[in-house]
Image: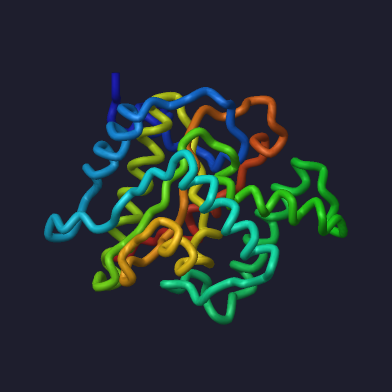
Length: 229
């Protein structure tokens, strides 16, 4: 039973258990369940009930061709102008330290040394195969939405992650996809104005995979919360 204020309640247990998973079991996830999860995600708050954003499941030959094209473009260092900006320019040192710590935790869990560039490249390339998860999603937004559209879509993305967690599934948002928007639009035959926001892997986590043993830390609440008055 859910008890308000109890960290062991439904939301607390789901949010505490959720993490970015980068290795999956081959166990299939039914199309019906994927549709159900996306429907649950759409219950997220939305300004004026506009419900921005789309979730595209990519399967079979379409997925193989997309992943191959992304890996080839990445290996050729053919990164494209992104449809939206994410990282602050310039990056404040406090945020840079968080970024570096996250990467260090990931590669340390894999036993990949800092100087092992081939090993790091091999791991990064797995972004473009959706970490071999049974479900691959591409998340898009219509070109004419303002920044608020990204806010609403972000809430829906988190809703999808928690809905998956409630079903015993795991997820990982894949920001690297946003670096190849034109390639993705061409590969999936999307309208020219479609903004590519991210990819998402979804499936059953491999509990034995070392990469899944790492977890990034969150800053203390006093860093981002204050009371006035």
